[in-house]
Length: 106
Image 1: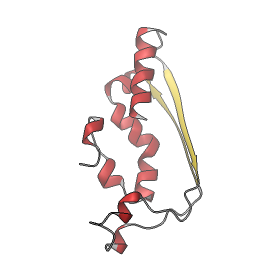
Image 2: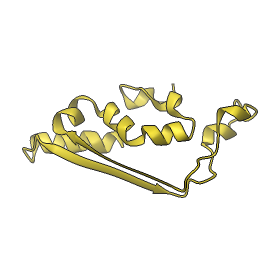
Image 3: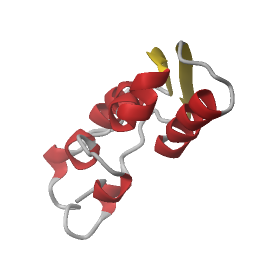
């Protein structure tokens, strides 16, 4: 998601001359009852209270943002799109906040 946002900002600023609003959306199915992969890792598999199964089958999020926000704060846009999903899977503290993709899960 981060790379798509950065690519969109680059295209908007350098090729499309678009500095206005962008609409982004994500729709993922097949989540109900699923646990994040971290729940199955040896270091966390006995910490049952830490992860709970996702409660719904689908995750859909739509946001509007600007070219400036895409270019200057891609991690924030990613969090707007995927933050509730990460919270629902018990991964918010692993994934957010970050300032560069290499920092994710550190």
